[in-house]
Image (cartoon, rainbow, N blue to C red; front, top):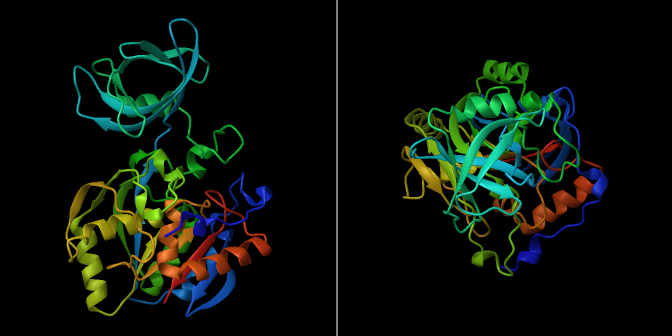
Length: 346
């Protein structure tokens, strides 16, 4: 399949730079039974039924971006990605912007541009261009990030992060730190909306996918099938599997909130049946792939040529995807992480 099939025209001013308030005031393009409609996320209960199940990605975004400095005074930027097995101290994979060499010791800087941790660059680049950073023994890296790091807003948000992004670029239910990007479809959910859905008889199941920076990487091969997607760690626990199986048995629908929830449950079903699962996934969902578990999807609007856009096309078809996105552009929907949403359900 030609990757160019997933291009589309997007006026730059439609890329959302700020989050809308309240969260569920975001606009919602619905696709149901082949018909498109226009609502807000607050209207979501109109499209769900008692017995349906929402699958949510419970990860929280780590304030994982640091300014850094070399011993020579040269400036760097570090993005922590994922913890590794400890050596003499904590070790993390990271992207480092700037020229570094193995064995170099650099300082991570706090919000006042003062050194807050010394880390050593190890000689372990992988095929995705990451480095491994070694921290001093006893360093609590998550506490360090929470105290001194910056929220890693996506590259298409053309401003620095602000204190309010620490909560607004998080879901209201996320409780496990691990991602460097938000599960953006879930950013629209509020405690009140979740309570209204629960009162309707809509249940929830929690899974975990630690979103990495590769989520923003475009498919850069001419043929979709030749692309090697980034790896992300995910977990579909026994409780989620039981809830999904019970929903299916009772004739309810499994609605994934976001592409990361889809990747998690569908990874757990790759063997043919849904089983508890945890580990690294490289599941690349693109047409003509069809989901085994997911019946419907709530998702944001995604970048051209992105693997996320291709996953959505598995639910809409390529022509249906282009029709929906063209209508969203025409009606001035807001795109990407802080933008509006689309609901696709039978």
